[in-house]
Length: 194
Image 1 (cartoon, rainbow, N blue to C red):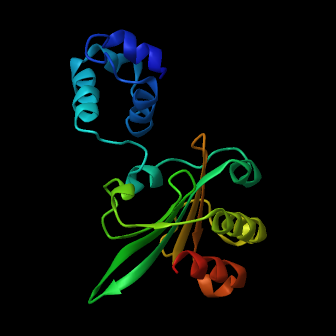
Image 2: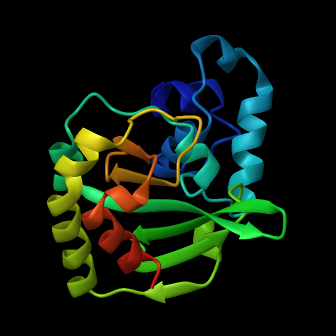
């Protein structure tokens, strides 16, 4: 769906809303052409904009996106975010724990449990250019191991997930059954969980 089509359908509702905002909305809510006949979507975009809602930072939404067809090298070349998901035992339950390196936001974020919110609203650990470079270098060193030994699709039992996202929102996901069997990946995980 093109931003111009959405803007044409809801011209009055979307006045003064930047195209970039509408594009980010479409990332989380991929509208179909037939949905443009419903006034609900124009009202929703306006309401979210007026309440300063940001799109593209909901971990759950991002994890639901499919892997791109491009190679991991293409994603790494224009890398914007790295997500690491591990599980942590809390009593009888396991909760998902995320470490997110966001190159644009210049931050390392840690999220425990709740994946349905804008992670950039949580505590942020500032990162510098050296840390970004270290992350990219480490990924370059483990990508072959991930391609060979991790699954690109969700598997019934896995210990960790590494997801890469480029600036143009291309995604590569790697589901790791046993982290212990991947020495270089272990080092990478330790770097992000600092």
